[in-house]
Image: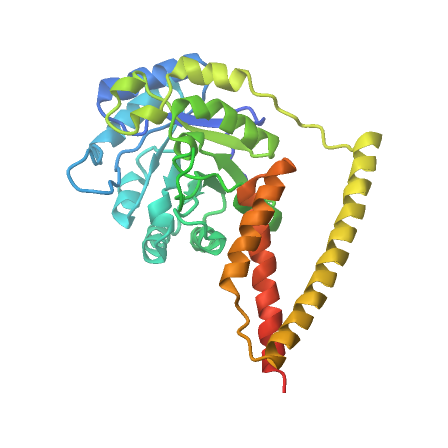
Length: 355
C-alpha cells in the first residue's frame, strides 16, 4: 500500500496532532452550527458530525440523515472549516458525494462487514475524497487491513485509519479497550498510513480523553478524532464521552508533543542493554521449549495426555501473582504465559505424532 497518501488540506497546518472534532450526532441545525463556531474560534479546522447513527437496538436516535448535509454545508460556508461525516452504506456514500463534504469516515461496525465495505468501495469508485477507516469492533488486524485495501482498490489514495479501541471481553476501565499493540503493528506494516486516535470511544468518559490523547501522541499517532458538543450533558447520543469545544482546546494545548527522533548516548546505551536482555530471553525460551519437549516424550512414554489443565491454572495463578509483586501487570503476564503454553502444547503434540 505504498501509494497511499496522507490526508492533508492546503490551509491546515501540517503538524501533530491533526484534530478532527465535532458532535457524535448532528442533532439540530442550531446545535451543529454553535458547536462548529466555537471550535473554529478555538482554531480547529476540521469539523465532524454523524448524520446516520447505527444503534445497537431500535428506538434510539438514529441521526437526521440526508437533511444534515445542508447543515454541514452551512458550517463550511460560515466558518471556513472542512466538514466530515460517517458513511455506513453505499446509499450514504452516494448521498454525500458531490455535496461539498470534504472527508468521510467508516465506523467500526461497518469495517467488520466485508460486504458493506465492498459496497461502499464500489460507490466511491472514481471519486477523489479522503477516507478514514475505524478499526473493527473485535481485535482483528487482518479485517482492518482488508477494509483499507478495499477502499484503496476503489482508487482512493488519501486514506487514514482511526483507532477507537476494541470491545472488551471482560470488564475494563474503558468503553473499548485500547489494545495499543494492534495499531502499533498496523503502523509497523504500513508506515505510510496516518493513524488517528478516537479517545472518546476508547474511554467512554470525558475525563479519559486527555490521558488517552497524550498516550496516542507518545506512541506517534498523527491525529485525534474527538467528540465535541456545545452542551455535552444534553447530547442526544454518547453524552458521557463528549467535551465542550473550549475543553478540547485546553486538552490539545496541554499535550506534550515529542518530535525528536535522533538517539542520544543514553538512549543508545539503554537500547543496547535491551538487546542483550532480549538475547537472554530468547535463549531461555529455547531452553524452556527443549524441556517441554522432554516432558512431551515422558507423557508419551507413560500414556499421559498432553494437556494438564489443573497444573496449567495453578501455574497461571502463581506466576501472575509473582509478576504483580515484581511490578508487572497481571493481564500482560497472563497473555505471555498463555502464548508460551500454546507453543509448549504444540511442541508436545508434535512429539506424540512422531513414529
